[in-house]
Length: 132
Image (tube, rainbow, N blue to C red; front, side, top):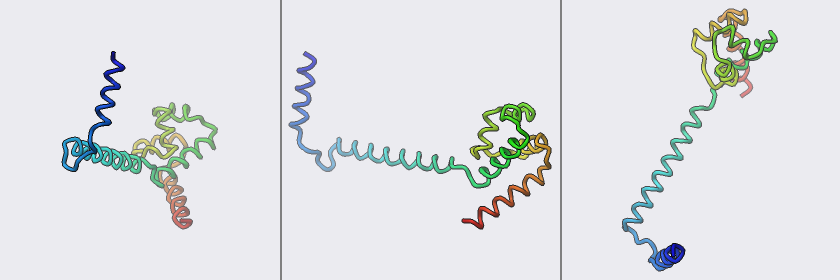
């Protein structure tokens, strides 16, 4: 019985005239199109804002380089800095920006002054800008 109702409903839908300009259904579809477009734009803006900056990427790569130079795991660096391993990973991938306090903990653990660390990062950034 349910199948007949579905088929009958399809048959009625097939008999419906095409959407007329200004109809209620036409207005509803227009609102849905607007919503879909706005959602797409919003998600695109979020995606673009989540892209790591050159500064964050460079800071992260320098943290990673110095950590690997000491033959430390992310877990060990996280332990000695009292940070979470996933946060260290996000920093190294440039997905998070460290606060001054966090950067101080990391540079102290890596046995380098923050000034020296930032000078190296600045030199790397300058080299990237000259290439681009």
